[in-house]
Image 1 (cartoon, rainbow over the protein chains, first blue to last red):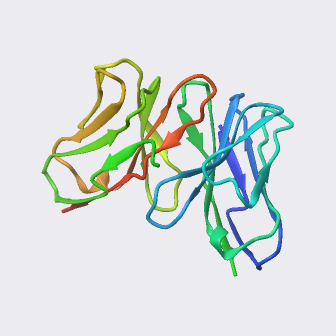
Image 2 (spheres, one colour; image 1 turned 90 degrees about the vertical axis):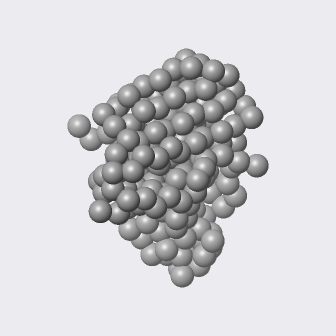
Length: 111
Length: 111
């Protein structure tokens, strides 16, 4: 069972570059989330979606964009990478009750 | 403002000791989860509690949801080195609100 799949696992970006972090889930979950986790810290919510075509901002949305054209996919876009966006990014999905399943994470370094 | 406050932030104990981790909020949650995260991995769900006063046991781990559904605790009996990790509480307030996380408690169990 694939669950939640994130790609890439690692990436180094130069300041000002753009990239898309991919996330796909095969559990038919309506809810999907993007979090970032800085070293030694908890998870901060960037964006979330309660279903295809619906997205909403979380706690730290600045510098990011998302789209949800299908139930399965929830890509996260960084338009102009900045050093402050160096972090580990986790995608997750859940049913309405909040029991979330996480991907393995994408470790992003902006230099 | 952090919606879910966890304490303590760090905990280092000897093998065989007992410990309790707390998760508090001023908001009422429709459900609350506890996750455990190991280095380089995404969080993994341990338990969900939904009823005020509910107690759930998972081997040596006991989870309790407060009567008012504003707080929760995780108690570990006879801790083992394999319990080492980051413990995160998370919850959903209601409806289409997103899953939000506390900052986590980093537990180290020394053999």
